[in-house]
Image (cartoon, rainbow, N blue to C red; front, side, top):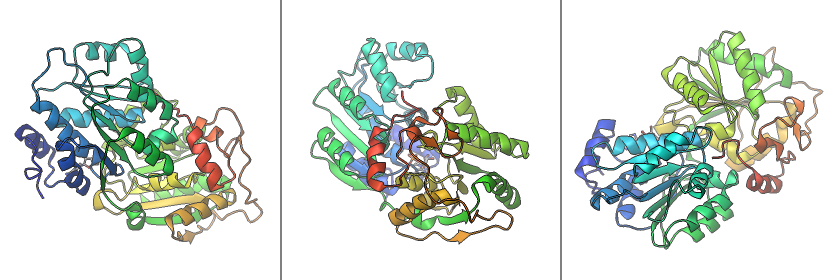
Amino acid sequence: MSFELLGLSEPLLRAISKKGYETPSPIQTKAIPPVLEGKDVLASAQTGTGKTAGFTLPLLHILSENPKQKYRPIRALVLTPTRELAAQVYANVKEYSEFLNLRSAVIFGGVNQKPQVATIRQGVDILVATPGRLLDLESQGALSLKRVEIFVLDEADRMLDMGFLRDIERVMKLMPDKRQNLMFSATFSKDIKKLAYSILNNPVQVEATPENTAVEIIEQKVYRVAKGKKTGLIIKLISDGNWKQVLVFTRTKHGANKLCKKMISAGISAAAIHGNKSQGARTKALAGFKNGSVRVLVATDIAARGLDIPLLPHVINFELPNISEDYVHRIGRTGRAGASGEAISLVSADETTYLRDIQKLIDMKIPVEIVEGFEPDPNASTEPVKPGQNRNQGRGRNSNSRNSSRNNSGNKKNSSRNRNRRRSDNRG
Ligand code: AMP
């Protein structure tokens, strides 16, 4: 299959070739034709599959086929759960539309709204947005969604995880009933199917890869370790392995900062990325990580979601997530685009239940190792910490809002209920 055969216009083919893409990825091969035909599409695809081009290319094709409208109303809306993902999708839209007469903009919270409003005033064809800022600006009269022809809901599962369902419903009411809808999600829970049913009209369903493919190609390892020895062990692993680009997950923002400081003290360049960091600081950390000046990026789940970091060789779970699906998302950051990767989890006694749930979800046993000098504490309790208690820093209201609302029982049913209650620190 080639991009030409998919029927994309010449200016798009030129942009694709400038990006260096030779053949469409499976999700692109499957999603582009029905989108070009004007159909609603429900796609199962995670980050790393080329899904962004899968919806952006045909969307740009459709918009460019119709003549430019005088005041450039917003004709396409792409809704994403996080600021980082919005920025990334926007960067893609800009690149792919380089040879087209189309304008685009991105809006998200956490930064001054004035420049965003000024850009929209000049007229944009494509708007990429996070829900909070979009609704804010709409209610201020700074933008209108009444002329939207194509609506894209990206990472729908994460949207629900982050508690954006009501916001999505509000956005839907602001758009015309007659429009084309595209929805992307990595997982398909009952709630996602319900949402899809309410948004999509007789959709074509496409799937990039079976859900757990990523899990199978990634080399996974668990190090059993005493809680107090995790920092020493992670520093040893990174130093001994001379790893150059490592993404580390912590459960809380505070934990991310603390670990980052310890890495730096140990002579390892590191940066933290989470919801309390300013947009500028996050962008800088990510850029440093991509260009190699930052060896270790310490992130919370929400901050890392959707980050486009190609070919990441190492992912370390400093702490296991108590939502098993988050484990799959985390390790999906490695082994992308067919390259193999390594995912390591440091597991202390009180994370035993989480490990069990994760293994159940991915349907495999992860090999366990113990490093001399960093042995687990035989006397530590395997009880997960009580709800509301931060597992790292004892009690504290300062923990990540996702974590603070969690029931730490490790019970799947409760976990999924909590998932729906989570609000994001990334909101807007
Ligand atoms: P995404 O899943 O949209 O986040 O894309 C993941 C990565 O794959 C990004 O770095 C894209 O630039 C890249 N990519 C997308 N489509 C292709 C393609 N057809 N060939 C090679 N790389 C691609």
